[in-house]
Image 1 (tube, rainbow, N blue to C red):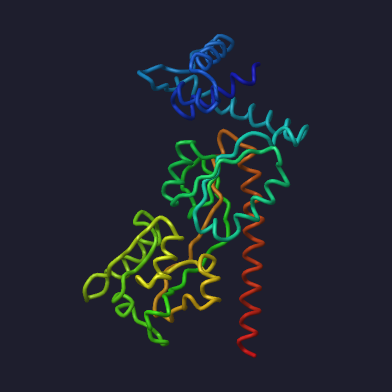
Image 2: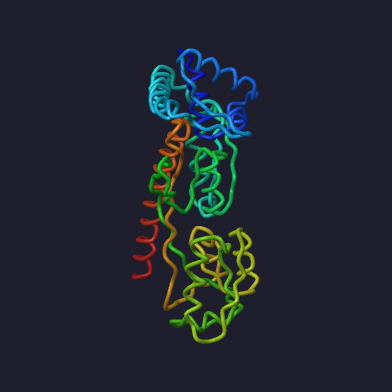
Length: 310
């Protein structure tokens, strides 16, 4: 049985379109149609109903799809074990949250290059909501994002979390004592984009105040948030990895506050069906590098705490 035809069957079923399957497999729509027609003739059944640009599985197609997925998965595992180098070439379409960019992403790429030197990578840096959409429409193979992604065919691997801290420019002359939420609200709050979990939590908390509503300067760019905070435009809550050097140099100061947003929890998320060995490999590397970064950061905090005690 022709392996390419089975693979095409799976992608048309997954994407619901001959055209999208052709784009994904870097071929033409007639070639996809010919593969499906040949497979239908070989099996003696009709697999799809064609309806104005959309392809829907027949009842027989739904019955046979799990078998095709299993055959393709086992064939890929066979090739992976027989020739590790061949299975690690191609393109990885990787989506990354900016928090990861400012922490362990460089180390991840060094590890990935050593493991798969023939692999090409297309990188998209965006907010987690958009990365999630990219996973679901298959424009991304893997995403490091604020997760997990609660979809049946998406695999989620836990990565390290990032605590958020309140910071400001020393030019604002904020008191060196415990600051209440209403005192923070006197300044513009520079924070994550409006379609993110951190913004939802922060805006909800400030909405509980009886005073005038807080002003939010939201951005999808953490670099922009950091720069606005450095320029004294307002206060901000950011991961330590984004502002570590500014805190060490004194260009930013950490604020002692009565409330801090929840830690940012990240996952390495990728589609488990159809099976993508490159995405799985990269996700495993991401987990390893993330764990190493978390241990190193924890050790650094302990060392700093001992120095402060002395």
